[in-house]
Length: 340
Image 1 (cartoon, rainbow, N blue to C red):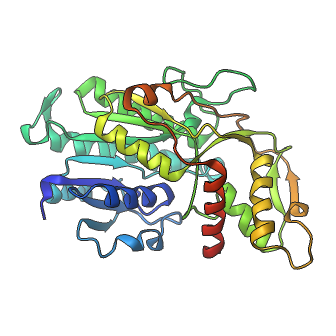
Image 2: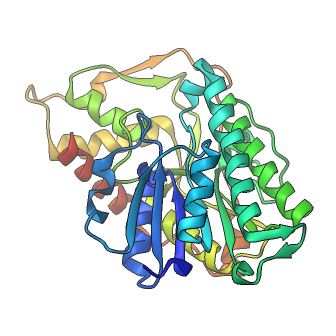
Image 3: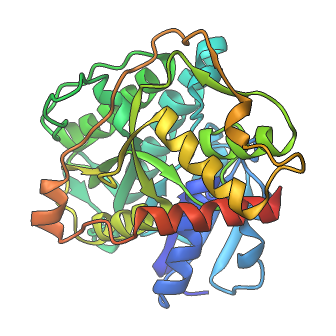
């Protein structure tokens, strides 16, 4: 194995991570990818079954909090880069158990940063020659910026952090650690903030898969509040392309916002998904799945709207979303139906 070309991917058995591993292996014919995943409930070996026979892929089961394991992996594979997906991500779970989010998202990121810094550098602003271009790509979320009202300009990379739930607070903490390592040590790091993703392999707890599973099971489709909260949706493959270009071409110490520019209320998106379901797998009684929608009490700290300006990544790195939203949504519902 040409270990000098190895990249460590953390959390590559999850939804976004597995899609990006798939993308990397198909688009990059030079590098080797080592996937470190703890296989908590959100990670699945089925998600990465496609990579098992690829000689440029290695799976390691383990936790980013395990410093001894990280040190051993850096020593064995001599990573030239880290793409860091591993995180607890579900807002409702963070409300019920914030401690795990702080441990994984903040302490786990710090442990990973230290392992990379100590292997790539001899001291502050002193890089080892072999790892002079080694880079850490931190995958974050738009939720760190907080909430927006309607008709308020989108968040930019200069917007202050204002997280409103334990999940987004833990991601903001991780982002600030990444920034501090760049400023304090000269550590080569880039952060990307992305809007809501959708696509194949997404866990059933997430919004679109949960709608499909509840609809097919004949259960109530739960919508928080009045369903008017707004999210910007991006197809996961567009996100993977943005991560790839930010990893290769992004300016060290910078952050880049990634968004699909598809703002929809939760109710609008639910209705669009159910309309597709009505055509692909109609109810036996001839009724529409929309009749299963049930509005429930809003969750604590529920942000009203997320929206990000993508002018920076577009002008500096040449990225913009390419996938048609409606075609991608149809493909997503079809894929999730096959896996239901």
